Image 1 (cartoon, rainbow, N blue to C red):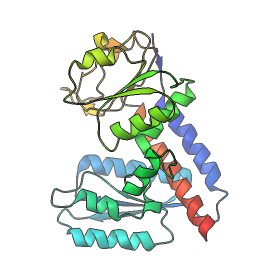
Image 2: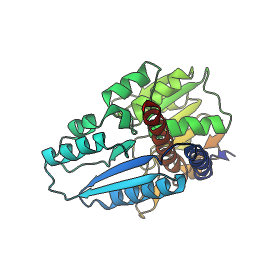
Image 3: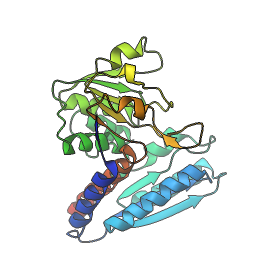
Image 4: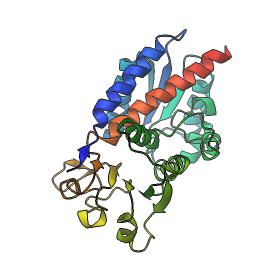
Length: 281
């Protein structure tokens, strides 16, 4: 029977540490959140981040823009926030409306305020092993492994998904902790043959029921990053939790696993940015 990794409890612990550290700063850290359009899921995420800021003693500045906002208008707002000394981090909630150039928008955020770690400079620093910020979801996974005493060194690790937000940086962080990493994707043949060899399995695909018990090694650590809704409308991940849980040694639930940790690591990145900015002044 697997140990359930409690991301919600660990996230509360991380945020409490961040809040305590922030008390020693000369001013409150600040996060600017940009929301374009009225996507209900995005609104839920933004509200959650604003609550996290309040818990950590941070300021939050929301900029809600209409769906039809022009690219130039959005870039002008980002430049204004880049210059605002109250703002330590800038977060543009994704996805953006289809008429906006997502890469251009994310690249316009000043690299020292890029608390999502999407800017090419920060991605390059991560790859070089000298990160300024850590990408929030992969960093949350690594924090969970540390908290539960799970060593990556010498382990076979399989990462399912190759997105720039989760899959690629997840593989990089595992590699930097001396894991032997295989990245799988939609073109990977015989996926189950790879997952059955994995000591640590991280799934970030977004497909309900993708990982079944027969695909998991006995005693594996199973980390479910995905956030899906099943046929009944309930939140679930990629992993068949009921089937896999008896076989794994550790497993994350959905919800209550990786999701809360992603937001907690964002708060840690904002604290890091605030420390850098105040050291410069």
